[in-house]
Image (cartoon, rainbow, N blue to C red):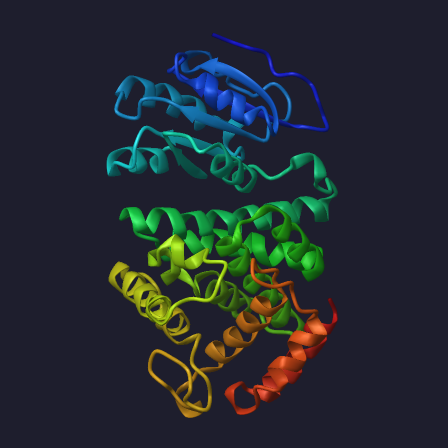
Length: 364
């Protein structure tokens, strides 16, 4: 089966590759709410997409070696190397998920379909290409956000399924992130991230933007800028192990839920330490970004002399990002309000470092 993609520049354009013609109609209909959908069998996937597409959705039997091989041969081609790819899983079995990631999945969705949830995942996986600035700086911004988003997918989707996150996964993204903010601005980074990512992703990417902008404002050498980008991307890795019912809870958490949430630094630390490739300072940030200089933080109640500079900086941008984000239970604080609240935290934060952050916060 083969349906030509329409040329509609104002809408997203998807290619749905399926070997399940009897079951893909529902998915095509859901995708049609967001853009134009071209449906092809796996044997008819073109070597090069006809025109600019937002992404390819692959709905195949991931246990079929023949189907997997047909898709692999197409997706390794130059025409699809930069195209986001969403895979449909028949169930949550480990084998299917691993196969999808091996084929370069940007994200996965599962049957039975929840149309609202799928639309959210599709919007995150396939940002609106036609809304993007196509200048050199605009393209740098797009690539930087896409690279950071892929790290979030690896953290929040792969880790819980048992696929380790590696230090190399983070290294692959950092160059594009640094270039994006240097070529554009923190304001543009936050605007793009705020439009296209769910809460867990958005917070980590906000923190990353603030961290890199702060490092560049301080005139840090590039190696140190990279260290800050890595720290920011990874700081909340442990939240991958916290139930969504807690992460997405719009109300006040119970004491038991709060205690479970407070486990995320330790859970993230253990996952990365067990993997073995992450440097000690990254593990330090993951474990201690909720520590305060006066000893009132967690999980270890560290005091100032035991809290490293990279943790102090990450804590500042983490708190500021959280305050200026819109949450389900409150509107965002302005950057000025957020900064004033952080000044009122007194000895909990490194106030000298906070004042150095002022131009970054107020530059928004």
